[in-house]
Image 1 (cartoon, rainbow, N blue to C red):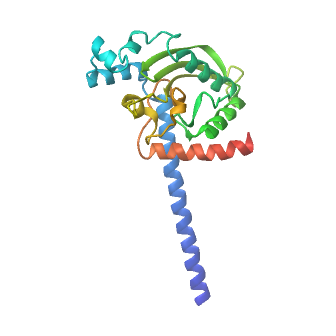
Image 2 (cartoon, rainbow, N blue to C red):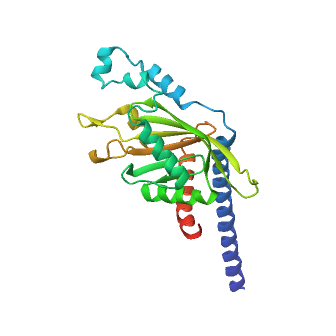
Length: 253
């Protein structure tokens, strides 16, 4: 009788753990689905307009004296659409190379670079390289020429229209329009990172070597221009998905 009771207790405990695990996984799946759903069905929000509104809320003084004092803070706004100004050609080249060939140049990306889209968040050049190596399995091509706009001292947005060949999508594949927001490691002023750029660098402030100044430190892909769902638990789930994908694609793709 004692053996039966012990067996029943063990079975009940195992069943409870299984149910709890199932509920946890179901909850995580719902959060991930919401994050992806926002990317697919969310309303577009222009990253450039968002940046301009942020500058307006801060009451940026665009006078010549202020621009000179802040390291030509207003200068980039005057030539924001100039694709040959500042780092724009460099950023555009690296983004297109990464998406189309899977190439992630260690000389162009910071060692702690972060990539985030509605599905996953990967950190570090190894994880980012693996993520885009795996993307090549879907034969990415440009459906339209990309364009770039400077929206901050060290921030750019690349507008892309990519075509991927996914299962059951036919020979034409699927077309994805995205705003790819790219941050560069800002120059230090008196030992302090540019505040505006540092706000977007990562969920947590990153420490970058002075040697990495000008390198790409963060990439955020907004499908259809829709902002990512931010904060807990979305960031945590996307990070978990990124880690699982990193391990899985290395073994499978």
